[in-house]
Length: 435
Ligand SMILES: NC(=O)c1ccc[n+]([C@@H]2O[C@H](COP(=O)([O-])OP(=O)(O)OC[C@H]3O[C@@H](n4cnc5c(N)ncnc54)[C@H](O)[C@@H]3O)[C@@H](O)[C@H]2O)c1
Image 1 (cartoon, rainbow, N blue to C red):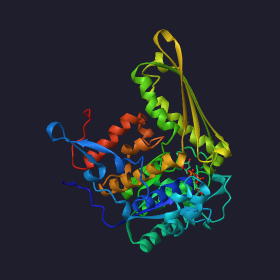
Image 2 (cartoon, protein in one colour; image 1 turned 180 degrees about the vertical axis):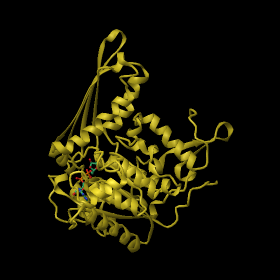
Image 3 (cartoon, rainbow, N blue to C red; image 1 turned 45 degrees about the vertical axis):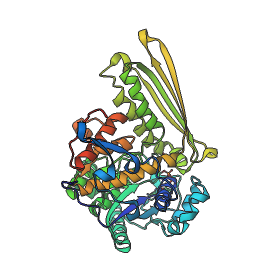
């Protein structure tokens, strides 16, 4: 098959994860176990999904890796940054997501993954107090130090390409500021002048990645790359960016369930989502300023699927509420409740209740694999800037809000976008034919 203009996945792929917590260690351990044949990467579309290419008599169903040149699990090298110095083995044990039997076989490899010092500012996550932190005078120093980390990792591990993905704690909410975040020149000026209010540490990671020729993915709801200045940098460096916030439990359900209400033209008067979770993520999100970042991300899903302006009778008055409560006994096993108040024929009310007893990091891990492999692919295909085809994996997909562009939140529309991008990068025609 001809890969029109996609460069092959030659050499090793370096995946540098910001954060060495529950999500990142579950991801890394799973990849290491999978390549030993000791676990299966379930939930990963790049490893499992098959999509149709061609039509009629010529149609075939192929794995993504048979359509486009994806990096192989065997070719991945990992690095992490964290403000706690524990290696990936210790962090995986601490996270208590995986059982010992699923960690021990790759203990040696995990122990070798020792966190690089974090670019961190306590004002952005007050509940964290690790001291494995870079000593930087300014935000620009942070950028320089992170760039050096990326260059060294490339040399030490002999990787030909790097992708940087944020799986670190959610930072406090940094709203878009038109004096700092609009143009690249403004952003660089603010970093050099050490504007600590408008430049979050995560922005330094993103800036460093893009300037070192690495795609950047934001897995938390942080603003980071969701500002025009970063879009400009991604265009300038020809690098893909994606975000925000891994779509794992409750929002996955919401973006898959809301379309049922919409396609049946039922009314929606309220959707109350609440969660309890007890991991470190839950602890950080217990802080109102950090939760606000998550709340903004989680709330956006519904209004773009059930649109008030399109159907005022049905969706003109939706009460949408999202809550997260820190509850240590549950650790990483999050429980989410959704109460959905709908109404039908002649306005008669009904209720739907969804109770999802999920495992946060188990749902997130395959998303990290898919997002990193597909961002690496996009870079080799010459795609840069915001990768909208990755919206499928994200709670609050990036879009050009300065041009009034809307995010696509409907899971099934997102899936069509994903499949078509794979088809196009594989040299096939995009289409929406029903399988
Ligand atoms: N698990 C899910 O379902 C899910 C879904 C969507 C988003 N997320 C997001 O993924 C992120 C990770 O979640 P988790 O459960 O692994 O949390 P965690 O608390 O276990 O791990 C996060 C790690 O990031 C580190 N960290 C914080 N700031 C840092 C910085 N500036 N540089 C380097 N390291 C830093 C912390 O020390 C911690 O070890 C969170 O932001 C969470 O909101 C998770």
